[in-house]
Each structure stands twice: as structure tokens, then as C-alpha cells.
Amino acid sequence: MKEGTPTATIDLPTTPEPILGQTLGTIDKILKTANSDSRNGKASGRKFKIERASFATSENRLVGLRQYLAEQEGEGYWDFLELRPGFYIIITDARYRRDTMLDLPGEPMLKVRVVLSGEIRFPDLQQNVRTGDACVQSIGSDEPASYTIPKSDTPLQMVAVLPP
Image (tube, rainbow, N blue to C red; front, side, top):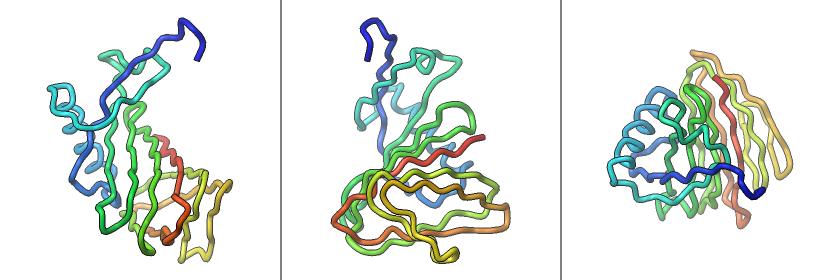
């Protein structure tokens, strides 16, 4: 980072509530509640450094949430960040102990994923997305979707973008 670049640091709270596989409306409510608690001193997450001061303003506040995997599932986390209303970034760094299927609700969304390490499988599409791959998924309002994260010694490190 260049000297003099404006930065902001926020607490990224954690949640015991399951957010994977929830609708965007439910995730949004959990994000807002958790980040409200964070501003009131109840956050238990990590510091998250942002290089754009505009995210720290009251009109344009970055909100985020971390969900750790349950011990029986594996180790690691999923970070959910809302950069702007309806514009989400999801950062995954997780290693699963067994093949795990994640179900996405049937609601209109476009999701762009970049797999930095590991693999995800789309059984309905007979497609695997591996290290270095990217994929675009369009989900309709009445088309629930799912994908599998296979058990692996390699963690799944992935970035997903859900534009408004």
C-alpha cells in the first residue's frame, strides 16, 4: 500500500447462525444485525483492513460477517461482505472433513466464482471448477441450485461476487 493511502479498519463479527444456503434477504438481515452489534461493542471477529476510506463513511458503510465451520464439518471460514446495497463479495478459506453439499435457494442471482485453490463440483451440470478456474452461475427464481465441496487436504480458497 502506498504511503498516504486512506484506510479504514472494521471489526468483522462472527455469527453462530447458519448463513450458507440462506436467501440473500436473510443474509442481509443477519449482516445488518451482526454489524449493528459490532458498532455497539459486541463483535468477536477479526480486524478487516480496507484501503478505500469511502467504505468507512456513514453513508457508504461496508458490512461483513464471518461464519466459521463447525468442528465436525472441518476448519476454516466464509466471509460475507456487502460492498454496496445488494453487491456482495464472499471469501472462502475452508477445508471440509467430508464431501459437503451446499444448497442455494431458488432466487434470482448471478454469481461469479474464482477458485484460488481446491475444487467445487456442480453435479447437475456435470462440471468441476478447480484451482485457477472461474465460473459464472445464473440462478432463476424457481431453480434452487447446489454444489459439492469435496473432502480434501487442500483448502477451498474461493472468491465469489454477487452483483446487484
